[in-house]
Image 1 (cartoon, rainbow, N blue to C red):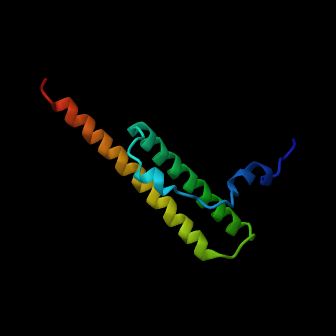
Image 2 (image 1 turned 90 degrees about the horizontal axis):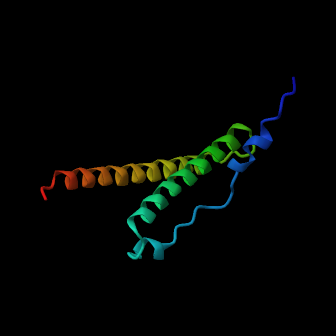
Image 3 (image 1 turned 30 degrees about the vertical axis):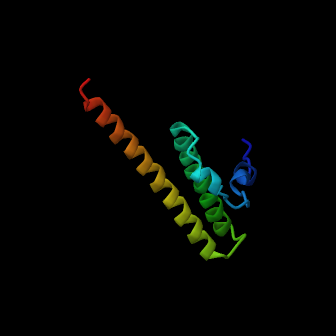
Length: 102
């Protein structure tokens, strides 16, 4: 039985590029709601990967910067909360439309 090392399987988690948010994209109202929703979900996913990567780096002893780990955790939590709030608003709007009499 061959045992594969774990390091090559998790290297995609060590993305060192900072997450960038385009302010023009936030203020641009020409995008569709589906684009805004998918962007919110993508942001939540990216920040989660960055958080996992920072945690793995700390656990493997590659870094000792605990403060940046906590910041990455907060970013991931905030983006997930934003995605959940957007989802809740979409469900509320759908339910409101379904209650309308035509």
